[in-house]
Image 1 (cartoon, rainbow, N blue to C red):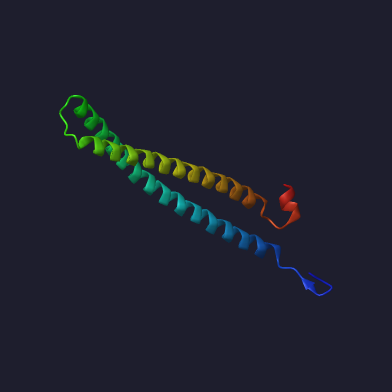
Image 2: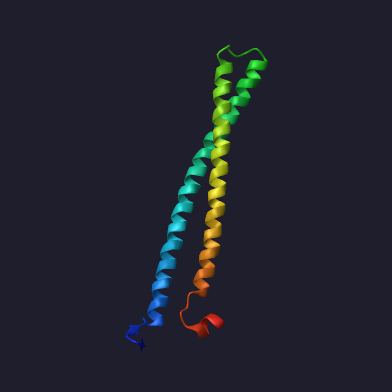
Length: 121
């Protein structure tokens, strides 16, 4: 339709463009979620290993079965465990934000049709 020389695009074309854009964004959010899941999995595995090592080492130290240098190792493991916990917390917050993005994207996709009659339904 032309009004004073201004032409608008076909609403169906706009809807298709929006749908492709939302689909691309949804795939990107999935890719990022997968990256976070892989990182979290490896980090959780290392975290479990560090906590187990620390527990056995502390027990050995308490039973006088560990060398003096074991205290340094316990401190290293403790620092590593704390860093893992912090990173896992950051990753959890990232997952929450991605979930919020998905919800917003879903809402936008439902409102996307350019036809005002479709939006009212």
